Amino acid sequence: MKIKPLADRVLVLPAPAEEKVGGIIIPDTAKEKPLHGKIVATGNGTKDEDMILKDGDDVLYGKYSGTELEYEGTKYIMMRQSDVLAKIEK
Image (cartoon, rainbow, N blue to C red):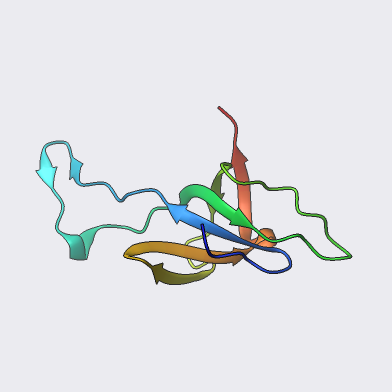
């Protein structure tokens, strides 16, 4: 990974959107944005807030959280650690 978030930011690889629901194929325009993904890079935190998330964590985030960006053909979301709602334990 060549992107290194600064301060309390994390880079999330969103989970793919649902392609089918009950045998019905959903067109791209009707797909909902996924609200979960995997952290692929983290910043170092700030002096007031330690970075508690780490690379590889599965997380839930809000519908309008972060900034979408594309790097080398892959879409990511950059957000602050505080925009992450929960960590998914497996």
